[in-house]
Image 1 (cartoon, rainbow over the protein chains, first blue to last red):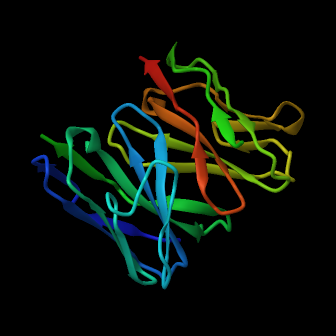
Image 2 (tube, rainbow over the protein chains, first blue to last red; image 1 turned 180 degrees about the vertical axis):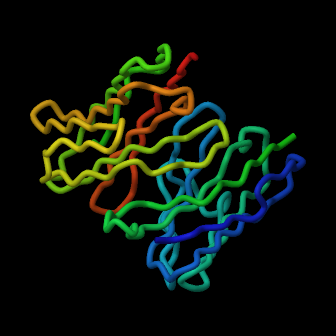
Length: 117
Length: 113
């Protein structure tokens, strides 16, 4: 199993500023994923972050807007740059893992709730 | 293209009724995985099940059951004898060969006492 923590849990930011979200996992994992969930919507994958390589971004997301770091196998950061109100969302990180019952799954962090004014 | 469709935006039932949440998917992969997650009002994502594309056996876990039909590309979720605590948004998701999850839009389930 994997326990994921995220910091901050929530923040209110002014437009034009940047916020860095941290994701810490209690075990070493190869792949980490960053998702965005806009209000009342489903999850959208932003990027896949592998340790030792550049993050792979999904269509509609670019590195200049959402730079990601992956310095080691237990940690990653996502920065939301030059924020606008449209960036108000929940940002979640996730990892692949194996549950105690043997089922593989994707574990999710508790999310970072971002409100941009 | 990979796609997950949850046609039911919102379902409202009275406690103790059975309710089925539909999920239809599209994929060209022969190996894939299907998930259901629950997102209660608190916002965390709660894993419910992961199903391998080669395993079409139906799954039952307490009041929860899942019906996987490859012939119709569906992976429906039934809650028997629903309870107020089952109220949440339920997401169906498809995992591709890159371990990325493609999410349905979610179904908001309201259980009235």
